[in-house]
Image (tube, rainbow, N blue to C red; front, side, top):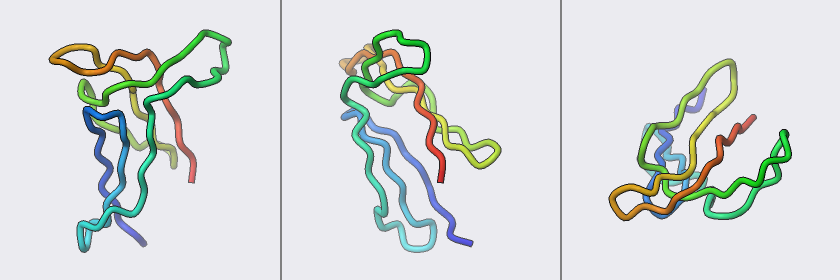
Length: 81
C-alpha cells in the first residue's frame, strides 16, 4: 500500500506527497475552467477553505476561496484512481 498526503494551496494547486519521504508525487492545477455535470460554468481557484476528503476510493476537493487574497472559484472536483 502506498500512503499519500494531499494538500491544497493558495496558488490553486492540489498536490500529493509520499507519506514515507515527503516527496511530491502528483500536482494538479485547479486554476482553470471546468466542464461540469450540471452544465453550470465552473472555475477553480485557491484551495484554502477546506481540506481534501477521501471516501469510497474517491478524492474530493473544493476549489475557490476568495477571502484573504485568495482566488475565487466555485467548483467541487472528484478524482478517481
